[in-house]
Image (cartoon, rainbow, N blue to C red; front, side):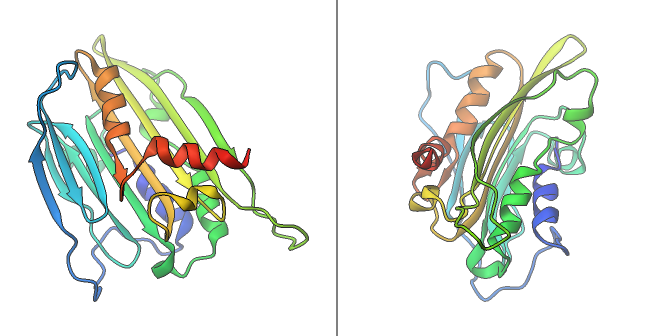
Amino acid sequence: MRTKLAALLMAAAFAACTRAPIATSDGPAAFTIRRLHARSASPSPLLEVTAGRVRGIFPDGWEARPLPRGRLGEGFVASPALADWESGEATVEGVEAFWIDVAKGHIPSDYYYLAARSSTLGKLASNRACRPAQQHVWVDHPPDLTGMKFSPGDYAATASGVCRMDGRPTRWAYAVVAPGFGPARRVGIPTSGLYVVIAVVRGPKSEFLLKEMLQGARFDEASVSDIYRAAGQLQ
């Protein structure tokens, strides 16, 4: 299930965004997949994927590949039906994580704040079978466009919900962070202007698996929780 959150965030931040590969002199990012040791609480054996400076976990049997790597950052997508996920089919299982590099994008930091603030889950948000999103905004410091005072211009939020298709629950969640000039920049990837993690799952223990996938995402060595804790230090 391709939620289109990634595409929306990128489009909001970059006027001419494309998911097509962009030529770069950096060379290919490392991409590996390995099996994790069995966890008794997990509803499925898990695999760990590494795509450059991004790591994540997903159930065995899913397919994974790196997102096209160009000037803007890197990440991965995994799903049992990658084509359906990427085409935006509602309630297809999958996970996606990526970051965007401010050092290479040459985009003002305000745009990353606006991109994160405008996040949505596309077809899931408008699907009548889905409950309204439960959103928690951890940090929201709008950029000061007047130049009269300093604002870190950072934003951090999580959202989750449940859809019921054919009587079966499909659970989804996402996390988005725009570090701006706030304390979240002290962890994770120093040049990241945006972090995004999206996951959709269903089946037995889907709530536990969803939490595992979100918390299993790593940017360098920082988890989503690490980044949110750092962001909250300014509150």
